[in-house]
Length: 273
Image 1 (tube, rainbow, N blue to C red):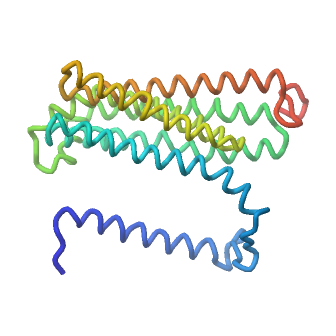
Image 2: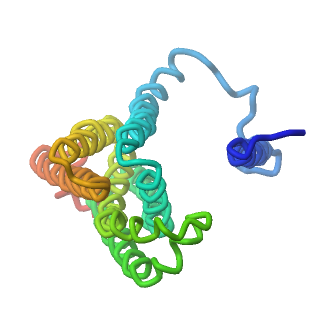
Image 3: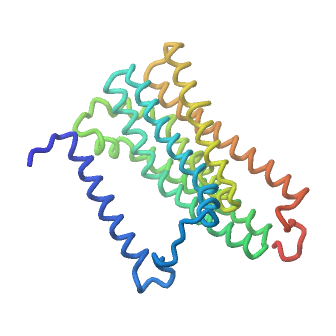
């Protein structure tokens, strides 16, 4: 079996994802699972499908936009050459080592906020976001600090023997590193709104992040003649700007709920806490 070098990563990813999908199906439909799904109970009717689609489609759209935007960013970045594009990719991978830890709070925030809403504890749902965001940002900054200390030793592991691009990786990562903390805020805010079934926020934040901030910023820096460090600038501007917008959305939503309540709940209800 002859496989091109560039195809080995794709093939390994396909095999790994396929095995995980099989494992997930076994667990999901397994008789030993107390919350297993039985195919006989699945109903593809309008009553069941429409509420699911209303919640899911904005999330799916946001993820598709985010992936598509990354393709556009990489295409724009090719103007700086293969070395800069490789350094940019490595800087993002290095950042994701800590960023993935900070981002794990998204799903728990969604679940806990939703559970508290079900128990009519509106105030505790908001407190969930506060605690999760604080922990995520602290872990993000801690991870950023550690990566700054070990970058010179860590980056060559992703460089594939191309030690010459490590200084360029450090230059881009000097700005990319802040995305570890700001991206954590973005995903926690998204997770909070998902718990309230306000899934359009995820779509809007991804749209702003890439098509209103990152891509225009990168094009502007290219027009100004900025070097490969523009890739780091664009990441910093887009993630920091989106994090500030996400916090603004949280503040607006909180003030609205404090004034008008949410559904049949208010923050002043004794059970809300």
